[in-house]
Length: 260
Image (cartoon, rainbow, N blue to C red; front, side, top):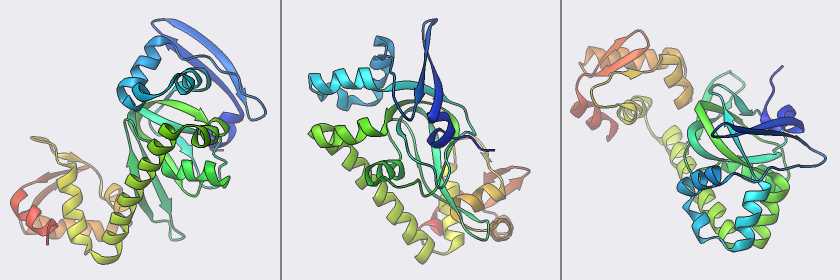
């Protein structure tokens, strides 16, 4: 049975807060919320990632410290699965989360990733519209987050212009990203998308650690299609493939293909 924050873990959740060895815990239920105020160290860390808080008035600052909580999320954890009730929204302080859909055929397509200082617009939409979460959100690398309960999130949208503008900017930025993905899926050839993906993933002096299935899941294709494209790239001298790794052999040619 899959447990997610959006479902079981937020209905009865023990939150462990750590700061230089100091720990505490409380239980959070869907019926009533109990909060620990953020420690000074935790709040200062959040401000570094979310400088918007430097502009916040005293009421928002006080409520942020009183009504949010700090949490760590292990890699591989499903934050939400499709159909979950969104009982809180996470603002990431570190790590990354992948949001994706699975079609009837079993194929996956990535909608977007979010990381430091960002949040999930589908969670925000689910909270504001009081609807269930429409996709799957999985932690890619161990993350730290400040969690804001749904009722608090809705209240701040109504009461604080600064918070509302911040959230709407996140919505605009992420919707722009999703529109670009739709453009790629509908109008661009898959070989061009694979080339662009490899260029994005490339780190100086390092092979790209990724499987054909992971690329397929990211781009909404099948492993067989990706393998065929990478085989063609290898024959043309663009890449060299190993087990779970891909090395770009001709970056200029790959860039030319990705920009066609």
